[in-house]
Length: 310
Length: 190
Image (tube, rainbow over all chains, first blue to last red; front, side, top):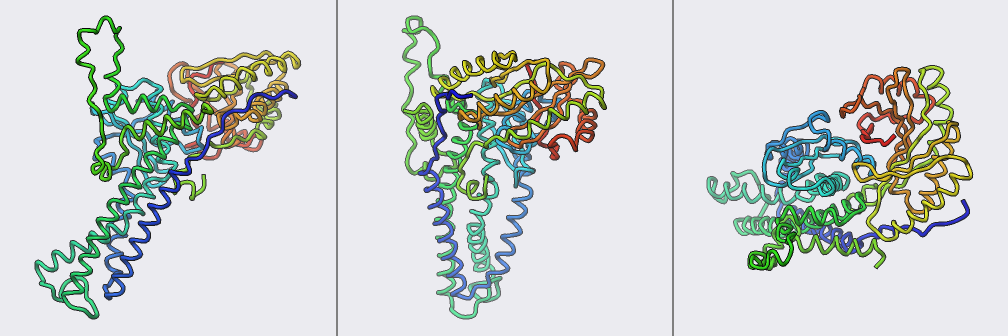
């Protein structure tokens, strides 16, 4: 075929997002290394703590699917029980070369969805009955694509690794706290030290608290970036950022505020449509695991402009 | 997607492989002679639309291009959108080799024009002596085939026939070995 057709738009990369994610992971690693250095400098026996943390993490890692399903009250469904859901997920998984994940449904009116599992082969995608009722098929597909992106990006693995030393720091704090309660500041507790006295103990305690706090914020930031990455992935998989945008708006209840009745008809009722300005307050913004709706919509809008070549 | 991409959450579309399609031309002989299946005269390509004016422009130009080439080769050609919002390009030709060749050419044209990432599957239809449809699905992302046998209009698959087909055709087709990648494809419009 000699003729050529106009080239399709290419998917650009979100370099900014990747850079941010890299910086956060780098900072986390730096904080953790500093923590290990402090522990080593004061001769804290790090190994038993690390073993315990690894144990807890492994449980979390290998049980992640069961824990998440159980806490959401979700049960796995077969293709016969939920044919439409399976059909959509089959196509999405095929299009990004992901093994078919298991599918679960939680019987609750709250609109929500999640994906879990340590690896793509062990993944589960779960949706609530609420989200299935509230969203139309295209929107539900976008939400499922978002969840499949989490699986593809191995978010369970990344977040488990990211929280490893935060867990060590937390364990350390607890041990020391209980140690000081019952055993005094002496050496009878779990962490025997070579030298130093109460001063060093307090320093390690403070270092643990500091590591825990800093890593908490960094992990939350990482979680928000991974949500944005999954949003982007969903838009790329479905080829339609608008589906995810309307799904997000519907889930957060904003869509209900877009009037679909004729202006003349609702003139008298206009007062009801006044939307309170939604403002993510900067501090709760730092604490939350998900980016604000505005941020997510803005990112999708800019991706959509990019796709249109604007 | 590599580990580094995973770590940085970089989603990329998966490129398509189209070379595996040709194996269908020879496999058809075995399917007809040994398994008594009858090859259909229509095959289809399923792909996903993109919300973009580039896509609209490219796909309407592509339409024209495909119509011209269809006229040259004498294959019939039509497009459809299914219940899941995916687009289908259906080609018909009484000669099965032509059908395979046309599917390959159309796939290549789609790929050359930047639709490669959007390609989902190519589908070949066979029927059993009792008239039951048997589909061979070519997954572009894997470059592999697997059988798909729906049972009537219920969304159920006849797994026993599928497994038998795949073990019989193992040497002739690049077969998908991982069963969790035998994705169902409901609503095939032919």
